[in-house]
Length: 250
Image (cartoon, rainbow, N blue to C red; front, side, top):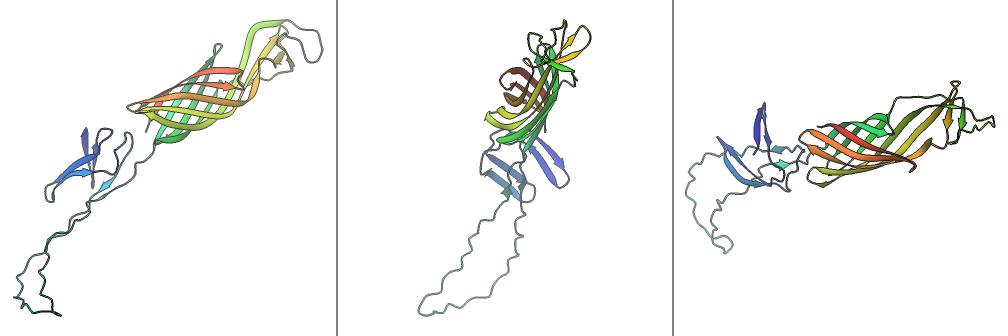
């Protein structure tokens, strides 16, 4: 046993992962030795063991002498005073765990922030939303050569490039071994790339912009109450972004 915490009407016990037996000692009821759980206990989960009080012992009183008389040709049978087993309690299933992570994505010098929230036991689900919080308006479109879709002469552009990124993904998470998990998910994403002319006109570059199906895959590791994740996100297989996440599980 790792630690014990006394509360009103209950006692919290912290035991190692994989515990299968428990010995309980009561000052009045005695010892319940080597109580075996139906399955090995898992980490991060909360179990409740309810122990019912044993029946009160009835004060024994002397019985009057019983005359042995034959009954339908059979001899009188002896009184069976053996004890019957009494259930010591029941074990309820573990509760699911939750996690909340702040994520950071990086692509060509642009940083995108996000939040990932999920729920899990051995398997679970999650939702991830991220953005670089840049909402760019444009006056037209151009290709990667800078040529305008309107057919006008190709202008001169500034060296700076602006990008707006927004993604929403959701999926499943699964425990692989110990506190190591893998996750995968799909959703929708958009990266808008904007070029600006020397005159200050902003144009969306359609060759470098992408929107539509988004996919995400990665791993998540629990360290005590801290959760750390690393993965990769893509939009249509054209935009790729590594993702790092740090948060808590509770």
